[in-house]
Length: 63
Image (cartoon, rainbow, N blue to C red; front, top):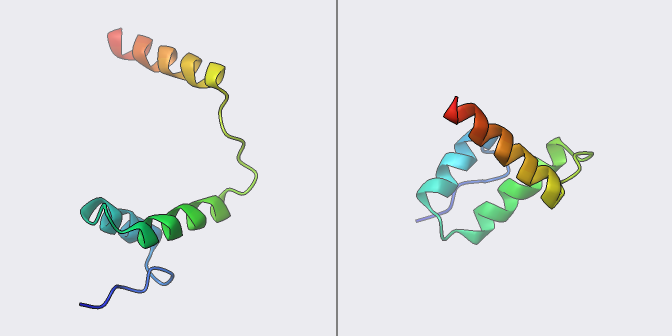
């Protein structure tokens, strides 16, 4: 079986493919590269920001 062309595949379709083929490292890396290319200036969260975000979300669910 030949692999699909991950570069030509729409990003959402690639995400679905990865969820169905979790051991396909090539597809995963291409997906991550393409996502990063869409948002090159996005700064990752600090641990403190992530904790605050989780607390905010958890608090919203409990309400």
